[in-house]
Image (cartoon, rainbow, N blue to C red; front, side, top):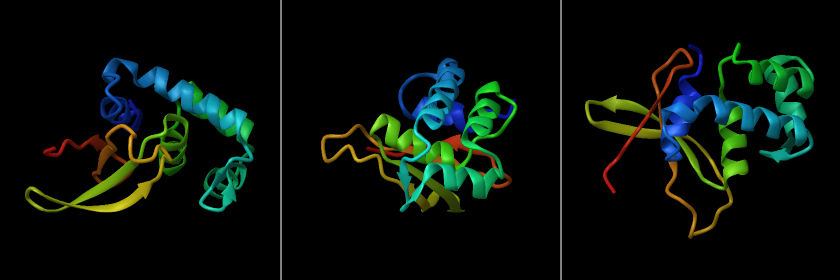
Amino acid sequence: DGSCLFHSMSHGLGLGLSKAGALRRELSDFIAANPRLEVGESPLEDWVLWDAEMSVAEYAARMRSGHAWGGAIEMAVCARARGVDVRVYERTLPGTFVCICAFQGGGGSGAAKPVRLLYGGRVHYDALETEP
């Protein structure tokens, strides 16, 4: 349904899979309300322009509608909006994973456990659960 990232992040946040649509709307609204938020030393509006070649308002409306896949922008925004680290992994060997990307939420040492995502290639994400 094009919402694998939102399902996976919702699971990682402990919200449950049924809240993926609500998380998509929350992050879309956050993007629309914070175009000048610094992400990786550039404002969010620049990231949106580079990635999607549209304005923040257009991008947020498209993402909110459910007709677009989420990606790095939504992971970075989730980390900031929720104050939790989001880490993306790839499988290297059976049962072995390597972190390929991390978005810092700024929650400090008392922050919730990180949201771990498994990148399956071709913009597909699954929740990744690891041993405590």
